[in-house]
Image (cartoon, rainbow, N blue to C red):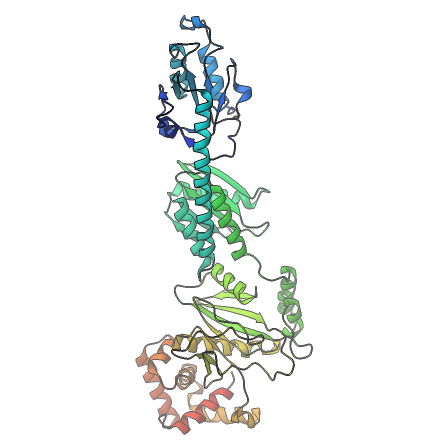
Length: 538
């Protein structure tokens, strides 16, 4: 059976009929159910027409003195009360207010019976109360409701914006939204899977219906859709055209302003999950295809939209990052890429890798080097980290590379040409391990001239292989020795950097000393081994 079309209520905050009845100055009395607390009204309208349907928008308190009702209406069949009330209900009227005097001394019994039959609240308006006074009271209550709604929306906007600025922006926005709506907020990915969620877990039926609603908005022109399942209000918001991300909301009730609050969250999530570079996805797709087909890295790098470097060669940073708490997900990795200024993000295992284009180098600069001041100091391996007890580092100058990000530990490589990306990847990995071991927000690998550079690279590598040959067949030993030397022989920090037990570090270092036949307490031996490890490739 086709449902009766009901005009939609005007976009104003509704007020409870109970609030109107509580006004002592009006003296209103409810005669028929449903309870006043369950009835909301969107306005007041006076009509003495026998058929008020054409003049109602829906949601009104209809006021009448019964001028159109004959005085003999108390006799059976004298007036069609049932048809009159049915038309009010069909028009979406919220309640009927009947004024006693001057036409009728009491509310007609036939009208009371019809309202009871159709479930329309009937309110008696006493002789001393004018209809204009009732209408004014309704609008006063609506003005207060509107002000309260605007305050609620403003507070929600501020809370959502603050959540979006946190280190974990997407989960924070979802948690804040779920708390505001007292329900469930879910972010769905392009394949329809839940990426992140917050709030009360709904039942299986509601969860399936919300996922289905999310799939609906991704396949239709409409960017929003709503439904009600098992008494729960559902809503889905597409986050940008053609991208596939959807915000789903399930709440046990719907209040005025909820749609606006959810729309604000949808806008923020669109920014957090969207593309963060002006370069097109088509260009990056082309670069990927060319790499797969055998093109060299330096040939496809210009398609990625990088910065300028020496001559026509684009230079890049490789960044390795791990969140301070929890494991990285696709959304938080995308947000990190946005903060670093690059959409080239790889979230694999527990480490996020980002390829960041280097800005143009300043004229006359000899390269990117760590500054001695500003709360940072150079490390023995060419990295920098904040000094203990130092003030927060100043914002890095232009050309110094990616900056620290709240909630993340970062390792940054030296700026390199595309042909050197693998070496930069290894630099970033070592820098991240050092950052985690020293509990630093950022460790930067910065190449600078040194005594080791005076030895020809080929001769240095040959010497390194000969010196480290006894441990060359066990990669874990060489990696442990490298980390241990870079951390000045600290067992605990090395264990953290390698994610192993400190006793494992002790056993490996003792094994290295035995195989190399070297005294690792001798600083000269340590220095020679460190130089060898720096020149050992592969």
